[in-house]
Image (tube, rainbow, N blue to C red):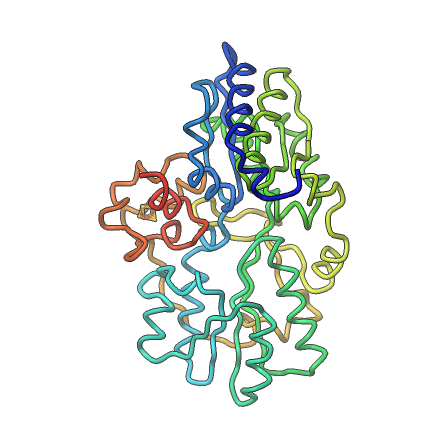
Length: 362
Ligand code: SF4
């Protein structure tokens, strides 16, 4: 198959659904989790849960980078945006995410200089053009976006810029999967492993997790036939009592991943403990700017007072990100909380579970 349409072929997808049903019949039940926001979107968009037999349940985990970023990070970004000589540069999704008492969008309406950029290198250019301002790029994301942000720090270093900073909140994926694998309440039977992240870190990164928790892992693509084949591979392993790492998305993902991207990450960042919304602090699950590049670290370089942390009453983003409840279980879903008026991060991001459920699942 060569073209996107081939992976959206209705007969192929329905054939895979029949194979999954035949394999799972009389076995299970099996619970599989996807930990990638693009998978979450695809599963809702193509109604793939409706194609699952009663023995197979698909649940969503912490796959959306904007959603897992805690309020404390947003509160710091908002506090920085209120400083007179600071320009905040960010990808668009972050602007609408509510912090403890405001959002970047509201701060922009009040006069803060907050710009949407399409690449971290655009933020470097902002710093070049505004030498009297401090430009802070909001560095949020998994291993997929972290190399581009590392690249921006390299570029700023090469240009000798003293007014470019990154407020870093990068997360790395295998660690939360370990925590969720050990949760008896979830009792997971397998993972649809993320595609973009795996293109960078390589499928080998899941072997320790797979071996420790005896949990099947299949790195899966984004089209409906990809997801259905990924589920079929998971059911096959679960029924056979196997636990191994497999690559369904072999047209993009290798066992070793992108070695150049890994090299750039290792140059600019070092592992750190990280706070995940709903999950808490996980040792070694984040990336902070390494000591030798610490002059680019906004948290160290620009001291600012940050307001006291508050969570939004009634919002269940934390439980949704752990796969414990679905968006439809939240009493605010579609009422007090909509994409136009989001209460929590999961309703804002284009990869958030609540946004996906609102757009396609109602
Ligand atoms: Fe939070 Fe809104 Fe999702 Fe409820 S529907 S969990 S309030 S984002």
